[in-house]
Image (tube, rainbow, N blue to C red; front, top):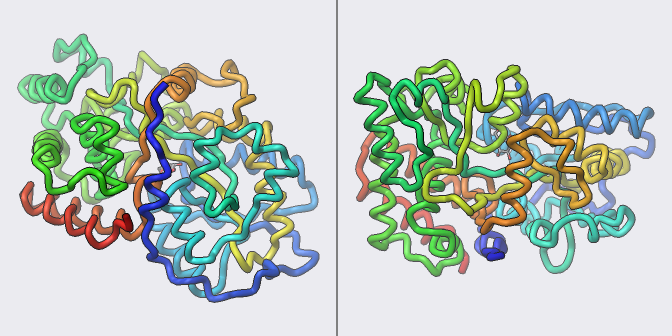
Length: 423
Ligand code: GAL
């Protein structure tokens, strides 16, 4: 089994978030608070269903506490992260917030905004239950700063089997070139925009999967630890492929989020969308059936690679109700919480003692791949690069959406790396 070091992203993490206003290590906190305010970006569909599952488990274990939902809508935290940054800077943290394992979490840790929760790991026995490679993504200087809720896979194509069949496409494409040929076939058969795409962050998500496919796992991972040159010709070639693939996408993308792009697929307007496996939850939530209404496969050229991200929950410094927040974290890491959440969220549980048979067809497949595949960190979802670096990349990708200029995109990516990489 080959494993790529995920720690590269943590080492590369930049400092973008100003330190939280409070140096008070007491955790703030009225002694008899009953509300537990939890900040996420899960407001609709399968994401909300997942959160509701987790809240159900929390309520059951804590009848005297009240969950307060502070969710801010927008896929991948596209709106939530800036709201959260202002709250943390203004000394107004929620009791717990969602943060991605890896470089994103390292930002909050380096900014001194999180409490160390290592003692909870000891109390709950999590060191023996969570995989080491995930816990490493939550750890700085031997201290653990959050509790993982799930593992998501980002390099998945979600497809409409009927649209593919009508265009005579019967095989799963094995490479980016095969996939481009299929996109062209679909277009020639009258599917105007065969690839569903949405706003800038979803284009970053697409780009990361094309980089993985074209560069391979080692060279892709090297983009984050400085061992791969962003100015190299192999990156240029990958960006040319990205340009070609994006050219098969819908042009109204700027105003859409990922559920809209997925709906283009299920409505039969598009054949494919590239997105993480929260799509599986959304399909379930809509009552759609795998292999009939939709199908899935790894982004061509990334078979055997698991583009990884994990949602985790934190205890911010100055949380109004730190004791309540710890109860929330216990639920997040518990067998009941992980099952209630992940069976609805499309992700797989982090707990190694979970039962695969509790999960549906897609997740059983992902569970198998998680244990066999080469793991690489997701860019769009906080594992690979700091928030500042991701913001700079997203801006270059957004500009490319109107310029279509690969040279300019590559210059922007080189500048983003120069300004943000720390190694
Ligand atoms: C990711 C997050 C997932 C899912 C997705 C779409 O960043 O980790 O849990 O919510 O965004 O919003």
